[in-house]
Figure 1 (cartoon, rainbow, N blue to C red):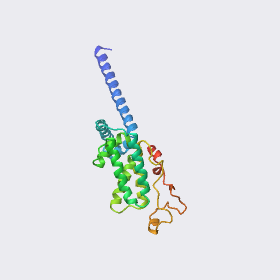
Figure 2: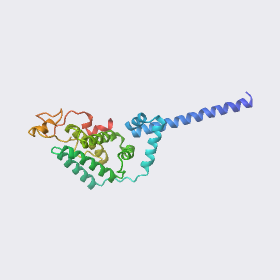
Figure 3: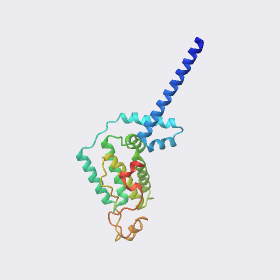
Figure 4: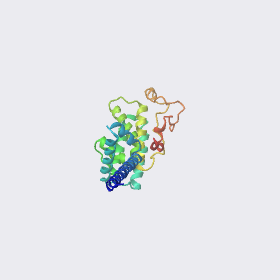
Length: 227
């Protein structure tokens, strides 16, 4: 083999090795993003023009998140928020529409106290996605129901689900379930006819105050991170 051929062979080998290193690094970064963002990664890939564009945005979220000064809750603050949430769920029986607005406000206060921006909903979601991606679908669902509630389009069962969705993010930020997995109560069977009509398909005469309809994983905040 001539010296020229040796040089060319060496250069080709170096190029191939460099390409493999680049591909390996890209794959490692992709695995890291998928692991960190979970379902939010798949959502971004679906919404953006390409996987590369989605990954650029997720890396940008990581950069902006790193600039935040996040504050852990004191035991006193955690107890105060847990008590506020339990009181909120009790109020749901008589004022479901108002309770959804109160839940949104309470979650917003907790988000702000932890150190996250509390402005536009889209900005909130972007910052929360870095450490709380697995409960964001619940937060988005709750937000959509709240908007429908403001237009007078949400029924009682939807409002109950909104509170359950809000609780998923609330518990994630709080570090514990504020009410031990208990869903918001609906009005008892001896309520007025109009309330019974709004109770939803899962309302049954024999249901006690702690009865939870078989509504699936959304009613079990400890399971939501696996979705």
